[in-house]
Image (cartoon, rainbow, N blue to C red; front, side):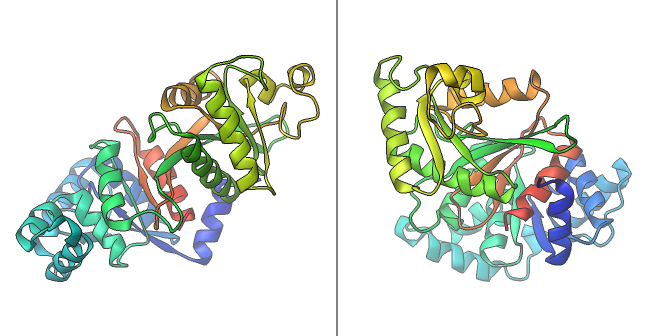
Length: 327
């Protein structure tokens, strides 16, 4: 079973560098201090060095050895501006406009990834998901063949056997009302992400209907999306549409959806929209005792992830490991 220990061991074999865009935030500083005490993930803190060092001293965190990059005194800033103008030339971005945009830590940090200075990025402790995703879409862009950025959560809970029980849920944070084809793309990306964490995906396309027990536009969408996903990924275990009880309970599955390789044992869940997904993962987190890691952004050319503004330092540290593991 994949664990954080496994991820850390792999990172020790191939260390990475992670960009934190909010260098003065105490939660970021605590996580960075913890990473600096290890040897598998090097933090880059974006911001004014004096302000960052003062914030670290005030909070009592040792960040000696951290690389601090100040957008106002970056020796490759002209190169960055030129590259950004080239990336955004279809929008007619001028050097003056680029300099203004790149003064923002979210855009500056994303350009550090584009320039190969960092391997991955984690932001959003103080700003919205949109402010993480927008520069990623504009600069890093989606992988070849992908049309959207999506997200998934990995949920982890200790089991009675001593291993961890792991689930993947998508899309719970980005796409408000995905189309059939977008759900297929979300499914493929979520399956790939789940495998990184040691999950052997059994994918359920969720609905309020199980193979025709209900009707309606939303049911049709999930049924059609599931059929398209099966055709797109013939080697994966995918089924639906199905209700959540049929997806996770073998007893219910025997009654509602016989002869399914997924029903009753699903561990990867595709939700019809962001309402269902966001509510679903939070129920699992708050009532089911799962730790939730994410949203993990999927479909980008480089690992860039978003933090909740309500995160704590442990969550920053954990998400840093998750983000680097995707690199």
